[in-house]
Length: 57
Image 1 (cartoon, rainbow, N blue to C red):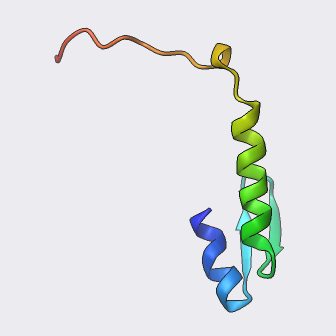
Image 2 (cartoon, helix red, strand yellow):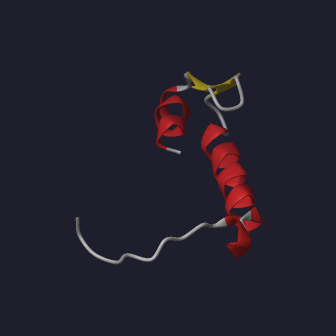
């Protein structure tokens, strides 16, 4: 998300290495926000692996 702010403000470009794509400034922040919200809503508790803290080493 933070990588989308400067191109949005100054009309630049942003490279997304995860998707291997270049995106342009206008509407970039909203696009990334939409993708983050979509990803977070897709996460199910079963996909998380939690380990209970037992003690400090």
